[in-house]
Image (cartoon, rainbow, N blue to C red; front, top):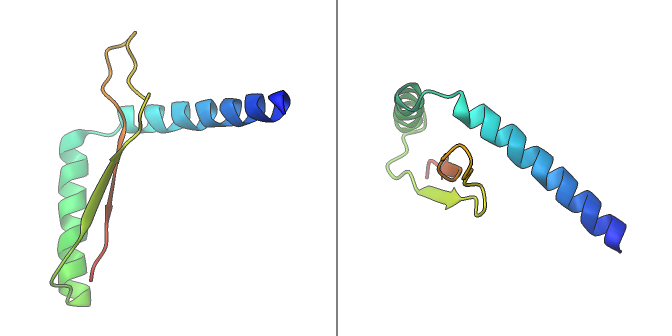
Length: 79
């Protein structure tokens, strides 16, 4: 059982580090522009009138050594 817990933790840490590195490289301004453009295309192409948005914060993803804020994920759906 201890091996399973260790492996699960190792995989999660690896994935978390990968996501952290990815999001550190994304320009917030460029992301905002792209996200807005994508939402606009949903409204135009699909005739969506409501776009529910959901956000999540990854607990424990704050990097104290580099003073990086927690990772966040945003999901949007055309309805």
